[in-house]
Image (tube, rainbow, N blue to C red):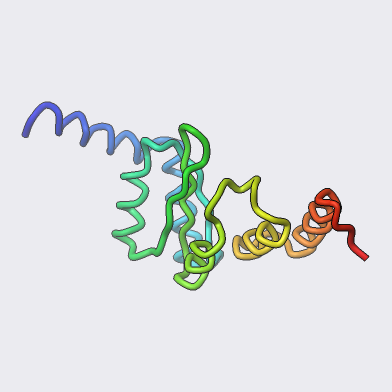
Amino acid sequence: MSHKSLIADDMEVQGAFSPEMRVLMNHIYEYKKGVRNMIIFTCRKRYERFATERLKKQNIEYVVMPAGKENINIYFGRRECIGAVRMFVNRPLHELSPEEDFILGTLLGYDLCAQCERYCTRKCKCGQGVA
């Protein structure tokens, strides 16, 4: 085995024990137990390979999207949910319409009443007041 591949393997092992990867492992556990149908996981780009390989090994559907210069968002979960995300999350999250933001929050299992309040607030800020 070359020195370069040993370094890559060591980085992957270290990545497995980073705080970010522990969060990922917890999210996977919650998904597998049925606590959530879909999860958004934000991490540094350098962990993408480790995270996506882990999801592949678990046969979990996912999609990766950029989140700034150094981070990525990995959406994973039920095939139906990830299919919906692929259809409308095609730009940075802060650029989503109030409706898209509401759908995404609901898919992620956020509190429905809080999502309704957020939607109304965002809709009013867009100059489209709520009756």
